[in-house]
Length: 335
Ligand code: ADP
Ligand code: MG
Image (tube, rainbow, N blue to C red; front, side, top):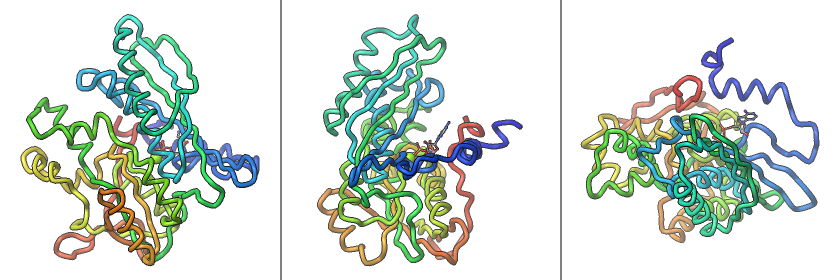
């Protein structure tokens, strides 16, 4: 059997089925943004890992050491945020092509990763160092904590829940497209930085969980539809997304009008926004609006969960309902 037939998620499902966890303290192993372990009464430990590989996740022609360091931690913190957790520290393992990568580059990398660490109260705990051969490889594991009963899983979505997304969609994918095209114009900085050094929604995730707002939550790393697909599958409901409600930033609208023939497709399927997608019962809508005002950035209602819907459907600007294939990035099919 070829990995491309199975796909990235087929492969992960296969591993999860073969090796289910046995220890009752492990509340969640494979299958969510972080593993969830109950260590002692009231205390939950969260553990998550993500790697970045040169040529697949980043290209040194379009980023620098500082930004790459920042992003390496950001993508991991996003997974702790998606559980509503508080990150504590991280381990960093590097496979370094020593003939090509300089000490100055690595110094910048550590400055970037620890800058985000300081900002979020997360410290470097250790790691591992090896010769990397052809590609620079970066692997970060992050440890977090949460209170018992406050962890938000992908699987808690309920029939009739409202669906919300934090911040804006599609910026990171458009930023990558502009970088790849080699176009750089004044006014593109925000869009480009959304790809190069994304902002994890650490505080937002914590506040949502503390206030008991979401029933289910996931971060958007592979694209809205792909990650919503995980949430609906695990929650046993379907979803309707209203395309007119997708939050698109002013810069996205302006630059997409010039460089992207299908901006809605980018907002639906473009990855790496690292925003949070959550469902909450309609009674929580005022609390969501209040939190959005407190944080001074949008948390936008984009649709509903429903057990009458199978999979994901979208409502277009004419009110027409269409089924969609929730395809996002798959390493073995698109890599
Ligand atoms: P995310 O996009 O949130 O980082 P992934 O899609 O990478 O999540 O992973 C989904 C789940 O599968 C997570 O629980 C992750 O820990 C697990 N997982 C991914 N790859 C492997 C692997 N090679 N072996 C075991 N578990 C894995
Ligand atoms: Mg995730």
